[in-house]
Image 1 (spheres, rainbow, N blue to C red):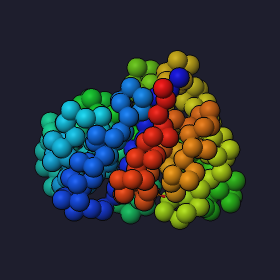
Image 2: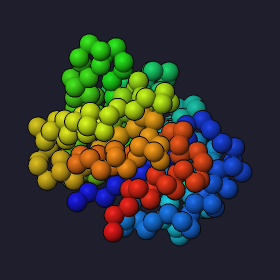
Image 3: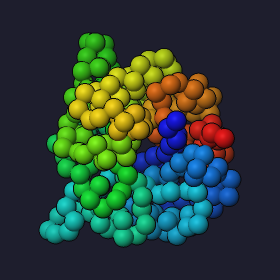
Image 4: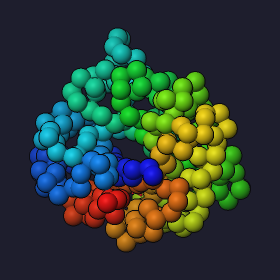
Length: 253
Ligand SMILES: O=C(CO)COP(=O)(O)O
């Protein structure tokens, strides 16, 4: 059985004191790491203080992006080595907002995935189709191409530690959620795509999250599906009480 991962992607929200208060509020109430992985994915400026706030608790901290090189003349970028150095454990890669607004490509995501393994960061790789692509019946192939490129060149040992977040773009921040059945079908498709080039065991261990308007009211149905192993949550992760409800729903005994 795959352990669920509930990750709150704050995007560009919260000032430092609000972020610290949030972690202080939730850290005593989240289930143990053995029951569910709880990740707060925060802006770069907040990462180090949040790692310190979360120390000794079951809350892990993730970054929203990074560059693929260790160091050098890359003004404005943050390296995987820097993230690891301050105690960050996860990194979200290829979010649709980064693909759309900041020219992130499947190639750059693949480089970053390799860099995350070099520095022992767990990558949360985002994939998902647009409204137009879904309307044109291209969702499966779009997602398949994104997954194949993102994971290109990984070993089976690495593949099993990847987290893929299936986030249909039309469901992000819109209040529209994919039906639990549709979301599950795409998550199962993703696992089958992985099986076509990694071994069965690695593909069965890899976790696939759903993201897009996940909230306390729909999380249980989504997480109850056979191939949905967690959630990547924007809006509903910003308040401590709703975030805790989401994490609680991911818990197994
Ligand atoms: O983009 C998302 C998480 O990465 C989803 O955002 P919402 O939960 O606000 O729809």
